[in-house]
Length: 240
Image (cartoon, one colour):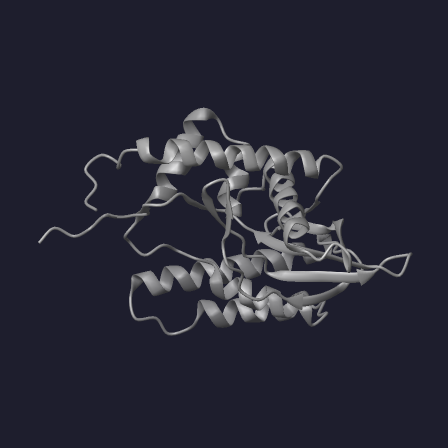
């Protein structure tokens, strides 16, 4: 029996993270992003889920001690592991937390209340399931006593700063999606509260003045992805 190499996703589906990458990519890379979204590798992928949980709890609780993140990093790195994959996952999560502990002072979050974000259902936009998974929700009271809200998403790639254009697009997506699903009579989605945090450099990318326009361009890109999806063929030598 031949082992599967990829899992076919029949209906168009992409995450906000990869859509931001798509918007800033070359045409060749865009095709690659669609292909990787349609044909997901069957092999287990290295994820930073544990680090994200730790960071969410850290920031929501208002902690500022970098030594605590470093200590947690060492704990994860030295956890018992059943195989090489578990060792690699532990090492990746530990490395993420260790890096954030080094640049923690550079992460300047807006003055607001922070709460852990719940799981969100994908948003169906222009024929594509858009997976939106913010890590932290932000809210505060504005000068006119109106409730302002936003959300934070972490990004991290070992040894690689997040491209500013990608950070800008991701924060624009946060802003645009929240505006579409919010109660406009009760709250205002505030651009400075819609942020993407680069865990490698500590740079905080807030939705900027062109966020609304950027989000419209992203919605147009989703329509294009939906059109291109059926024509994207499996990777060479793949087994579905």
